[in-house]
Length: 227
Image 1 (cartoon, one colour):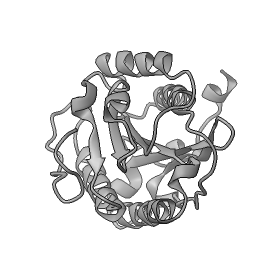
Image 2: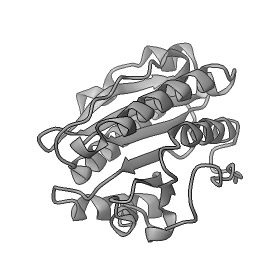
Image 3: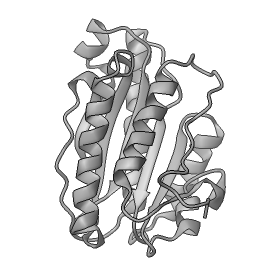
């Protein structure tokens, strides 16, 4: 709880409304090779695109969370404004503790919202961007239920992305109140196109009013039809 009371210098210096984006990324062993390389290039592209936008650079707040290793989820980069964001260089190994990762992301989102309220900073609904190429290896059902309940309560918007043929869209869909219909399957290794879409979406959301309706860019250039 103490972390919620520590003043955030960025929120003091920059009182612009925020758009929180939690990137929850599968770094299990099956992501080794071209997939993790393209993911890292995508993160670097996201950094570049957001920094180049005068509004998004000040308003988008990013958290990068990786899961893999020996059933571990950890923060690869804590909450930071896009203008100060440096894309991490992720490595792939180990298992797929999706439930643990999602629970950590939900907790970090609530902590960040508490900081916003303490600083008097408005914010749009946080995004939880969940990407995986496999099946969870931990007890994920409880975390999925908490994810669905949070989305139903408008506390977070969930964007599940299935990478590769081994990713189970039905399982990823359990983390969204919209079910498998919310899952987008990455077409091949089009991480560049995916992260260009994500950066464009963040630009749109960061310019919207909290609670306002938005029209996101189409996903046609990086995703097959909803799975």
